[in-house]
Every structure is written in structure tokens, then in C-alpha cells.
Length: 197
Image 1 (tube, helix red, strand yellow):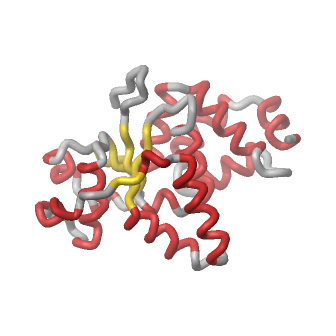
Image 2: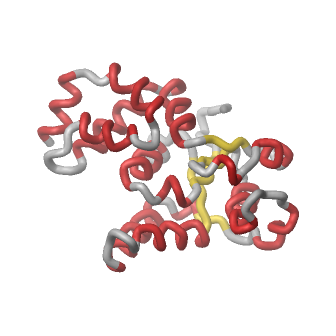
């Protein structure tokens, strides 16, 4: 990954990483100022997120979350990619819109937990790297450990009575290597500050 001072590295986030709240929040906090990268998604991706969230939340809660994402990242929305969709050879044709949005949105990386749906050779042919969120977050931590630690501490403290340990346990479900790398670097003091807020 090439990271420059202008934060021009662009990442398209698939629905499967935007739906689970702890991981989504971590990815979006790292894309907030001071941003490590820029995020992209499409209306189709957000519709998939909404369908997933409707299983657990009310329509009002789902809409509030999606509106908040749109408001905080107005530049994230990608459109105008439908015309290039037929050029992809993907295992699941329903995923064409994700790859097309990545290309039109200028994404350097597509972050998805569905790696088998996006074969590396096809993505490389299009100039897009595909990464699991665990690998992507681990890479961000290796590039800027202080910023990632700060984001996690802020994230833990944003919910009353949530400790950093609770957050890390939630994140470890999808991101075990990332959590294994960052957990030892977060001090007891950091953990108690997050739980006390």
C-alpha cells in the first residue's frame, strides 16, 4: 500500500464490512481526520447493508446509521459505473457492481470479507488490490500504530461503559490478526480511560 501525505489512497468498502458495527466504525474512524485513506461505496452497497441491518434493527435505526455515514462521508458515494459491469469475470455475477464501483471510484483497494467472490487475478487486471478487513486493518496499524490505537480508544470511549477489551473482543471475530497485533500495545491506562468515559 502506498500512503502519501495527501491521503489519496482510496478504499472501497464492501457491504460485508460495513454491516458489522464494530468493524465498520473502526474503518470509518480511520478514514476520518486525520484520515489514513478515503472511503468509497455505492448506493447498491448501502442497500445491501440496509438489508442486513434490517434483520436486527428497526427501519428508523437503519436509516439513521446510513444517513450518518452519508453525511460524514459525502465524497464516498460512487455512481456511473453500470456501463462497465459486463466486462468482469467474477464467480458471483451479483458482485459485479462492487468491482465496477471500485474501478469507477478510483479505489486502490477493495476491502471485503468475501475474498472468494473477487479473485485476485481479475482484480489485478483491473488495478485493484483485494484485502480482507483483518489484513487491511493490520496494514493500517503497521503504517501508523499511534493513529490506529487512538482511533480504537476513541471508539471504545464513545459508548458508555464499553472497555477497550470489550471492543477488541468484538473486533477479533472478523479481525483476529489485527487484534492480536494491537492488543499488546494498548496499555492498562488506555483501557481504563476508554471504559471511564
